[in-house]
Image (cartoon, rainbow, N blue to C red; front, side, top):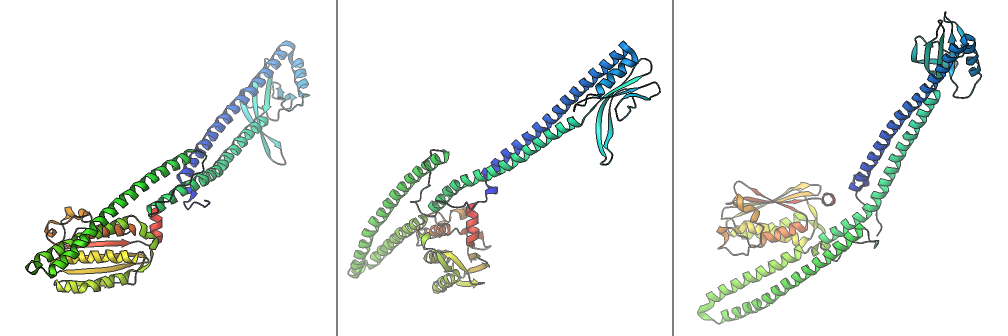
Length: 461
């Protein structure tokens, strides 16, 4: 399967890890370059100083051995050496006049110093000299110097080399990081898409692998084996639950039919038989609700999602339950701020709204106002079913969606305690956020519908 990862490469963990290594390597190149630069500079300068020192000692020895004529002869002989690393010389008399040498500047003090000079007056090129200026017996002075141009050239070459290496490391590291991220992200994206399909109810989906035996292949094989095992267990559980429900539902249905026939000819036992029929109806409703919840939680209904008129569903549900609420002395009102369309299963959404409204009607006394509201815009809608009845204690609200859970005051009332459990299952299938609030007085259940782009964005995080 070939596709471009939807995740931005530059935001991926793989690229950030590669970028960290690139930064570390680049920093290492910078540190190594600086160390090499300064170490080379010091070594070259020590070499130049040693050459200057040796030449100065030779000139001083010649002067002490043969006087000024021998010193001048030695200096003039050395001036004829024109190779690139030749030293520069200068001999001054007692008055500071030049006797021999080609040093372009006259040192101002004895000892070591640096002197700048103009190499080319037309271009104002400035050179630098390393100079050793020493006095001789008799008031004479000698100066030996070396042009530092070659040292500067060597230092520039080192700096340019490491600068090129730095940019090469950054460029190649970035390109390599992008390439590595793209390759790995394709495989990670394949795993993510497979996991998303499985979470949407397609338990037959499996994670692809290349068969090269690398870490991701072994991980994919392990996950696929786990998914096979989970799918088998879920199928076994579903079959067992379905068989139990159907096996119990069938004899109960036959029992109900017999009770109905017996009621028609039982004479004075009609009341008891009718009560038994009612009990059987509640048991059948319980099994139907359990089967419904199991089907919804399996996620198989996602394939039937379509554009649904949520406003129309609420209007239909409220219209259907208005007579029931009126008979119980309750006021059922509807407030729809605009036309709302969502993506989902119309039948399940209708069931969810009906359960919420019916639950509010059943568990509130006469005189209660039950308000169903729809508001929001741009695909983000909130449905609120609120009443001003007795409400639910705060410490029990988180248990309302548990299967078979009923408040103490509701245990004597008809029902199985599965209505809100089905609401929760349908909400999770549609990725709807359910919130319970204190209506002060009463209870409010809020359903937060998010637009499809926001749901996809949240799923990719």
